Structure formats: structure tokens, C-alpha cells
Amino acid sequence: MPELQKIKLVLEDGTVFEGKSFGYHKSVAGEVVFNTAMTGYPESLTDPSYEGQILVATYPLIGNYGVPKDDKENGIPKFYESDRIHISGLIISDYSFEYSHWNAENSLREWLMQNEVPGIFDIDTRALTKILREKGSMLGKIEIENETIDFVDPNKENLVAKVSVKEKKVYGTGKNKVVLVDTGAKYNILRCLLKRDTTVTVVPWDYDFTQDDYDGVMLSNGPGDPQMCPDTVKHIQKAMEIGKPIFGICLGNQLLGIASGASTYKLKYGHRAHNHPVIKVGTDTCYITSQNHGFAIDNESLSSDWEPLFVNVNDKTNEGVRHKSKPFFSTQFHPEASSGPTDTEFLFDEFIGLIEKSK
Ligand SMILES: NC(=O)CC[C@H](N)C(=O)O
Image (cartoon, rainbow, N blue to C red; front, side):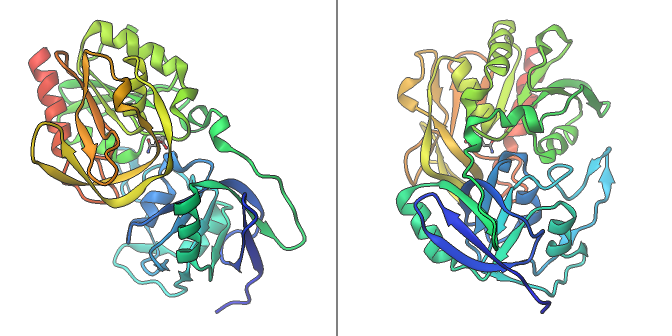
């Protein structure tokens, strides 16, 4: 094991955890959240929804399968969810300095260094997660020795503007024309669309796509508080008047909800895992889903034209909405998975089905 420098995590409530630095050695502040998935750190670290957050992995052994090659397909990385690491820092229990996997090209440590993202290991992540579970997600800061920085609340910033594409870009040559509103889209949403005979135009979060020629709208995931994107909401409202199919995922669910008049609130510690059970409302069908969110739509605030589509079995929170008569629906979980279970990928087929029916 190389010589490692000391580094600490300081929580808003004053708790301090001392650990060892294995990533880029610098101080950083953000919101501390935990994810209970056992695999998928390359996908999580590059998920733009984590922008501004310090991520705690509750699974104790991290780094053992390295990080994948940066192979491209259709002009986008095959194994990553965006072009860079989005988390502000990584907190783990045991870092595996040895890695082995058929697809590994680099170590997690090297990759964190290249992206200038700090990592701490040798932390009692069970004790830390219990604090976050009991008190809720809180602000925190990673501090190197002899340095003090201020806490920063990323939810007060427009993080979506930071992670969205700056210009329109077209992918694929399929027959169904989908506008993908990039509020921080994971590449697997694009991959799932391209697999289904589509031409996808990825547009910036504040672009008025309603003037374009399209068959359906896909609203992506993304970071931060959904109330920070009024421009996107305005365009969604215009698209609802046009009436072509709309499918939203995670932040997309929240923005569709807000556009329909519903309100959102912050969950105590959010859902970040591979095993969240959701029930399709009105059925006995339960799906196990991949999730990463800290906000939710208030089911009670839905207007009379809308209804909950899925509900979380654990805490009964909203997991999706749909319009009662128009082809608009969304999910709070991730049907594109990556990482996590792919059980709900069929929702992309349902979206394409709605597009074909409405043409
Ligand atoms: N993955 C996402 O799209 C997250 C949505 C939103 N930023 C939340 O935390 O609730």
C-alpha cells in the first residue's frame, strides 16, 4: 500500500470522521448522500445527477474491479454515463488497491486523480450512514490537513445549467424523432432510445424544443432541486399543449409533475440503491428498480387530470405520474438502470408504442 495522507469528513452537525486519502488530495464541500448498491461505481460516479454531492458507498469493498475502458459506440462512451466524474468526493470503507476485471483499464484511484476528485477510505461507513439515515442527508466537507473550508449547499445552485449540453446534437437515424431534454442525462437513456429505431436530438435544458419537428419528448434525469428549472417547465407546458408523447425519468418525473401543477419536496435521505420496490398503481405488480434521487412529487398535490403511476413500497412516496387521457408519463426510478436492475426497461417500448400510435 502506498504512503497515504490523512484526510477527514466533517458533517454539518459537527461529526468528524478521519480517514486516508486515496483520490485527488484536496478539500471539497457538498451534500453528503449514501448509496447502498453493491456494484456500479463507474456508472454512479459519472451520473450527472450526483453533481455537487459527496457520495458514501455503503458496500464496503470498492475499487476491486477497477474502471472500464473508454470505448465509444454511436459517438458516446459504452461504459460510462457521461464524460466525466460528477460526484464531488467519494467516501468508502475499504479501498481495493488491487483490481481485476475483463473490462478494467484503470484503477479507481488513478481515475479519481485524473478527474481531480478526492476519495477517503478507512471510514466506518455503517456509523456514517446511520447518522445520515437518522438525521437526513446533510452538508459536509472533505478537508485535508491544515485547511478549513466552508460548507456549500449545492441545492441552492442551478446545477442543471452546469451539466447540460450547450448545443443541440443529433444521434442515430431511426424513424421515430425523439427530443431528449438534457437536464443532466445519463448516456444509457440515449442508448435505450437508439436501440429502438429513433433519431434522438439532445437539446440544452433551457432550449425551446417545441418549435422543432419531433414525434416524442424524453425528459432526462438531472441534479439538484427540481424547482431550479423554471425554463424547462415552461417548455414542457408548451409541449403538453402540442400533445405528442412525453416520457420523463427522475428529474424528468419531477419537472413533468411541476409542469402539471404538482409540488415537490425534499426527502429525508433520498433513495439511492439498486433494490427499491415499486408497485404499479391499480395492480399487484411490483418491480425492483434502480434509484438515485433526493426530491419527490407530492402525490396529494397532483391535479385531477393526473394520477400516480407507481408508488414506492417502502415509504409510499411517488415513483411516477401519468396523465389520465394524454400520452404523458414518467418515473421517479431509472428504467434505463445502468447500474442496477433492468426490469423496467420495457417502459421505453411503451413510450415508442405511444409515439407510433400518435403519428
Ligand atoms: N437522478 C435524478 O434525476 C435526481 C433528480 C433530483 N435531482 C433529485 O435528487 O431528486
